[in-house]
Length: 202
Image (cartoon, rainbow, N blue to C red; front, side, top):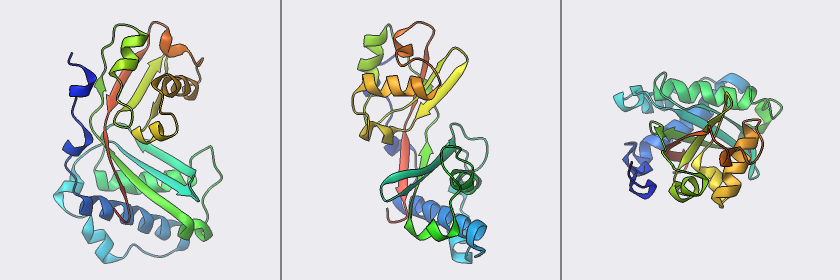
């Protein structure tokens, strides 16, 4: 397998900045419809009606409030259209992220909404823990870690809080409910993916 730095990057996922903004605005409109009783405006629906949004891809919707995480839920692979995944994951991030109480209608104006569209996850082949660390690309790769029947992922955005690969992997192990050094043990599988991330303003 080629070295990690030669793998495809997120600029090859194929959504324009305008299309990404349309998805983020659609996510907000869906939440306003669900929480505040306001229907999704026709122009917002029409903006995500093109064939590019019919494609299947993994999608995460992340909600933040005053810079702090308020909810994040998504799917790693494309089981349905990007448009439908954005709608469903927006609602799930707001109402069904077990780490947080449900978002209220009064909070909507204070939320920042980010939509991440994922490339297809690819297995990362590595010889040993040191080789794994060297093959990861901080700020670029999202990582799926599997071990002992458990699985967890971090989006590439998490590198902003955990820039050292060793810390990134240790926290990912803990997220999976495993010991923080699980990535140093045998029997660990790793997949990587890239994302295009979009907010309502770009």
